[in-house]
Length: 249
Image (cartoon, rainbow, N blue to C red; front, top):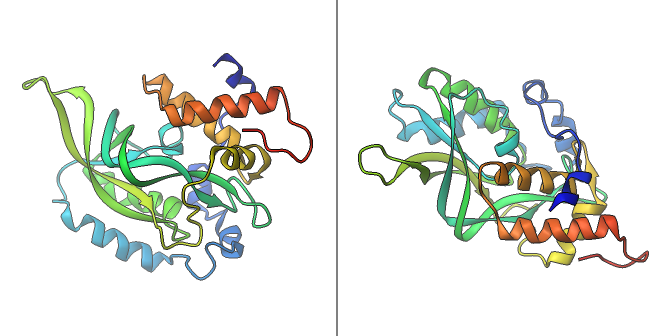
């Protein structure tokens, strides 16, 4: 929808420098969702060791992104490919009290929850860069205990030259931790839209995050009906606001 471009200008999101300097750490420490659950550097190394136990140390490693990683990976990679993962779907089911909201009024961001399938992007990491790049990614995604890291079977959209069929590669990704206090569960569209429009944090509003993710997917030929529906509602609310005290959705 052409009016979506009015919602965002320059993409807003975390930077590699933010992650390397732990600029959001103090905010996470005050978050009611992450309090007592923050991973230490030692925790991160143990988690990485467990994750990479399946890696032979020689091959490239793929990372699957379904949200902001698509348009703001912060990773030094050697290529990216559209891909699909089965068994999970993209949903606004994660409360955000730092990046897209505040402790007083948490916003929402995307996570992968059980069921269905999801199209996104895989990023290819060179073997010599795997450990450093994944450490950066862990500090970005795993700090507050909201996600679980896992291995996916990702089917690349690019056809295999010999079989003319989509290739399947093992890829590391992050799914919602349903035991975390930040898990919001399945919310009605009107509640999601209200939070996306009405909440903002360190890196902007949820509405900006939604439209940037939708635009990044469309740029590689992926249309997500769920995001598309939410975008239409957010645009309608921004152009024709509802009366005070009502929810647009």
